Amino acid sequence: MIASIKSLAVLALAATAAQAAVVTYNWDLTYVNANPDGLFERRVIGVNNQFPVPSINVTLNDTLVINVVNKLNEPASLHSHGLFQTGNAQMDGPSMVTQCPIPVGANFTYTIPIEQHGTYWIHGHNKGHYVDGLRAPLIIHNPKEAYTYDEEHVIALADWYHREHEVMVEQYLSIFNPSGAEPVPESGLINQMQNAKFNFVAGKTYRLRIINMSALAMFHFHIDGHEIEIIEIDGIDVERKKVTSFPITAAQRYSVLVTAKTDAKTNYVLHADMDPSMFDVVPPELALNVTGTIVYNEAFSLAPEETSNWDEFNDADLVPLIPEAMSAPDQQFVLNAVFSVLNDYSNKAAFNDITYVMPKVPTLYTALTTGNLNSNPEVYGKYTHPMVVKHNEWIEIVINNDDPGNHPFHLHGHIFQIVGRSEGKYDPSVPYPGYFNTTNPARRDTVLVPSEQNVAIRFQANNPGVWLFHCHIEWHLQAGLATTIIEAPELMNDRLKIDPKHIDHCKALGIPYSGNAAGKEGLDLEGANVGPDPLPGTFTAKGIVALVFTIISALLGLATIIWYAREDDAVIAAQIAKAKAAEEEH
Ligand code: C2O
Image (cartoon, rainbow, N blue to C red):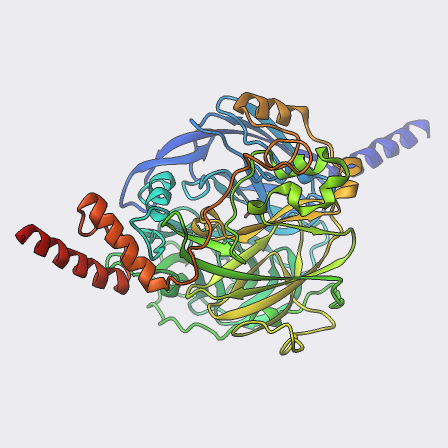
């Protein structure tokens, strides 16, 4: 009897342990040589000398522990994209927002209690490390999944470049690229390779978890000969929705259910088409139609490829299984996203004329060390674009996209409701034109704001901490398209605990870890990092481009240093070349 009670107790313990395991990954960040598109071998960033970086798999209620050793030759940090990190903002990862990056040769342990389920990813959040390969799926299983399926496949999409991010970003932000043309990738990859294969067994139902880990590209996903049903967006289970295809921007995730045929006589092509509208030019050698194979039988031939028909699709139509009504906002922010040539003559981004520039002190540390001043946005410095919000208030952010490009915006630490999307600029003097589903709007953590449109999102400020809100096109983050949400600063000292190791890292890097954005007391922000500002209003965009080229050609006598030139650039370059030729004749 006693023995059986004991064994019951052991069983009970084992059961709790199974429910809440500590899942440890040891990740040495290392350079690796790889040739993922089969076209070009280069140095990439991998983990434990491996590339692709292996997926992380955990279960709801686990604690994820990642022991990182930075064996790269520059500081690094990791961000678990889409995780709330409740009471754990110090583990969120963006460099100079919630931590000093991990110095070369140093180690750090990210400890993350898992409070959600669904499809996420983890990526470098210092410099453009993820563009160079430091990115991997992060899958959180739910012991009680909302849908039944037999098996799952992870399908990670990504754009791929042959040059290293550091080289490209320097060119991208240089005065030689006044139109702000983003580097165009050389390839698109599925699971960081060409021709990825996914095995299907007749009659089985598969959950496909599709993640876009790109720097820039948006993909359209579909599978020849099969119907797909969306069941999850960005970690939120949604009512089944049949589609033939759907678009997925950088940083978004979808799960779909697909049932394997019972009478397949061929294998089928799986498509991830890169959307050309994201690229300034599509080089003739760039294959937009990225494909993989659904394999029923290695011996089968491939069914002839179907032509791509992209569905009209609005992610705001998706209906979360757990409803949450739209609440009236307590505070509203309207952000105008614009790109232009600034007074450093480079083309950069701004929200409301503020280009994000990293502060001298990580913003979270400013919040924790400035006493009551931490509710005053000034203390964080103008160029972190701080937006202070009160605990548990509902916040609305309306993003006006005045740029000719589409932008996927991501909020750290939260899921938000997509409450509306409309043409043109939002007009605060009239009611919002057409909310979507007010009783249960779609929720996600990364939303596309198409060119010349606006999107309204709402979230509850129920997570004290410092959270970045930014465009997830990595080039645009580097160009300053970011703001910082300072959430319930008065509660942060009670709820958040900085790992002393983080402070060691700041010390090692010579980064101050207390005080305002300038590392000083009070509101003396002298010496804070400042950004480039808009040029005086009399300059038109074309005028600026022309001016910049004139300055460049005058300074350097260079006719054309154009990378992926837009039409404007070519015209101006021709003018400059002509002027230069005339000058030489002289
Ligand atoms: Cu995917 Cu700032 O993050």
